[in-house]
Amino acid sequence: MSKWLRLLRLMFGLFLFALGSVCVMNSNLGYGPWELFQSGLTNLMPLTIGEATVLVSVVIVIIILLLKEIIGVGTLANMAFIGIFMDVILSTGVIPFGTGIISGFVLLFLGLFITAFGSYFYISSGFGAGPRDSLMVAIRRRTGLSIGMSRGILECSAATAGWLLGGPLGIGTVMTAILLGFCVQLVFRLFSFEATAIVHENLWTTLQIRGKSKS
Image 1 (cartoon, one colour):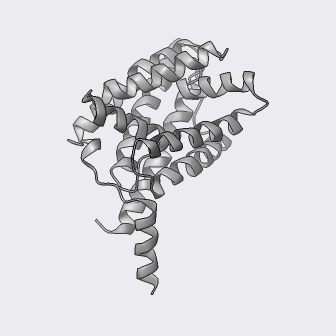
Image 2 (cartoon, rainbow, N blue to C red):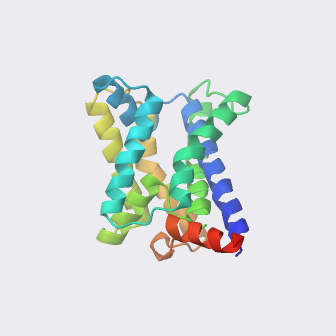
């Protein structure tokens, strides 16, 4: 697959991830685990949720560097573009709000699976996983647990920490923490995709290749 097709695959995956996140948010069933955690941090520090999101991403990047996972264009694009795509999607108003339990659960489950498909497309591009997905892969690589269990541990940990910090826990938070990992595992199995088998291109290699192509 050419580099341009891989970049297109990366950006498509990030867009799907953002779309899924907006669906979960608009379900009106509670914050996602990481949004809950970041909200909890704002109770401790003079930060907005956006600033807390950046801080958490930076800390996670440091952790995945220590775990010797690859930092690539995809890692940085994840940090930069998902938020931008979410703002664009929210500004269009194309995703409705859940007005009751049934519509809320439909949006929640739709969002979880769209997020899982987004994870598949951008991780499989080979440009490096996003900060949270890199942690998921690191847990999978080091424990041998399934990708679903690895993601579940990560999401449940973020939700628990956010709740302890005073974030607004909701039924949607709990369901996302428990079910997102299994949705990711189902989608990965659908494509016979093993996340730990991907050899990601690090940022330096990508820059070198681009530099050579220009010379």
